[in-house]
Image (cartoon, rainbow, N blue to C red; front, side, top):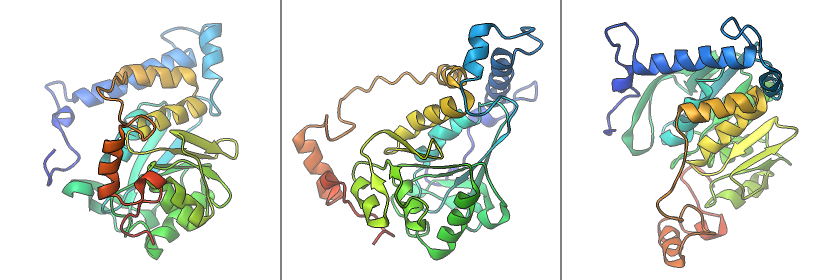
Length: 284
């Protein structure tokens, strides 16, 4: 993706039948999943095993789930691109993207993303997701914080990926709550009254608060959210559909596995990272 690219791709371009490949995948995933977990007309009724799987989630397939992903300048695309791939494929789920001013947003590395809604125009959401970023200046501004606090206080589920948990914690909604964060920033959570947990996925308050670790952890996070809310069958179906079958070529994705010299390289560009106290623009 080039620096000025928008959130479009060849997958989005209509084919001769009027649908893009992404449209077809989405329609197929929702229709098939509905038939599997809902026991619709295609199957007549769900088998006992599948009916049990459908009931494993906190929500029934008929319950709507409205998700707002709150983006901002300097945010990291993969923090929310991964989760959105999963959330868009869940039954009866609507995903919206919003920012402080609406319109296009320039993310990390100059990626131009949009078009987003204005946060102030969204009355409420069932779930709010705050992704992380390399520059949290706007995300920590009083105006942005006020909108995040408002939506979080009315949401059933309050979630974050990477150092997006710092943004949530700064609003005060994570006070006394356990939360994940990117390993380089995780211990800064305590400065805002949250409880830092160096895990890839963390939940508190019976699942009302759910968070993922750094960047790529957003996919694991979203699958866990999907399983918790829509049931394991829905999560497994979506995981298979997007071929999430990770096989990293190097075991260097976390300080517990990385070689000391590689950790030292990260500490040079992010001082304090190995202590979980790295600083990012916008965070005092």
